[in-house]
Image (cartoon, rainbow, N blue to C red; front, side):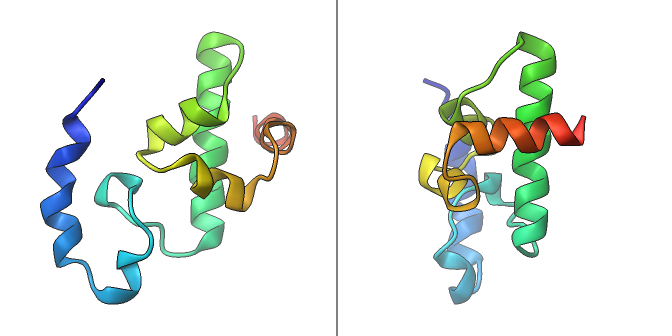
Length: 88
């Protein structure tokens, strides 16, 4: 696996408490849910464009978040694909 994400752990420890609940995002936490959704959709659309398809796991990995984070905004892959299709 790719271990580059470990470097953000130190930064995350410095985050204030209300951000501690939201881990990941490579240390760059979205300001709000709208921004989180936009980043997820962008990552999915980019993957679809590059490879012709995408999985929840792939988007989560690209963004440095867990699959649970993606599912919080998009309960199914179909929902994410639909949003990505609309955005492109």
